[in-house]
Length: 137
Image 1 (cartoon, rainbow, N blue to C red):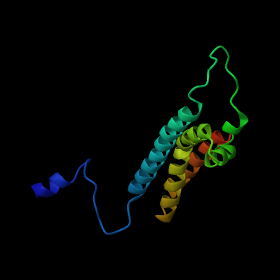
Image 2 (cartoon, rainbow, N blue to C red):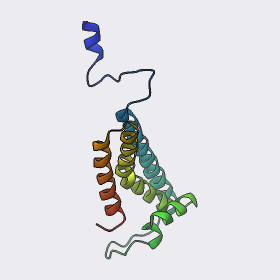
Image 3 (cartoon, one colour):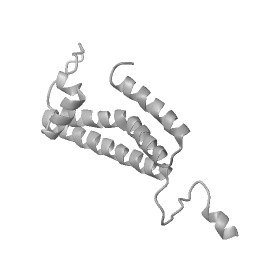
Image 4 (cartoon, rainbow, N blue to C red):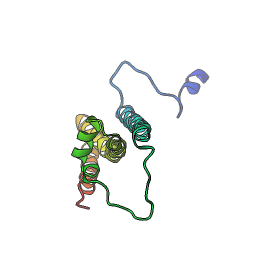
């Protein structure tokens, strides 16, 4: 009995032969997206400094960001085309869409389990996130 108690608790992850729990799927998604963002930010930052590190920066005035670094489609396109600044922006974009990916995943998993109250809540949260991320908020 004491052995069973020591194996349960907040630090213990239960293993079973069944499908992973929704919480585990969401935790893995969040972890993966965080690592993608970290690798993109660090890798892009190092790459940017290697290619542009010697440039003089004027801190006297703030210029608006280049248009290709503000559009999600352009960020993805330029990052895969080899633009180090876009690669860093891709990390920021990944962090911005992480909550949306979490809610969409929760929506799908709860619908699969037929937990309709949670589907409605996740659907509302997803709609609010989409509304805010598309600039309508």
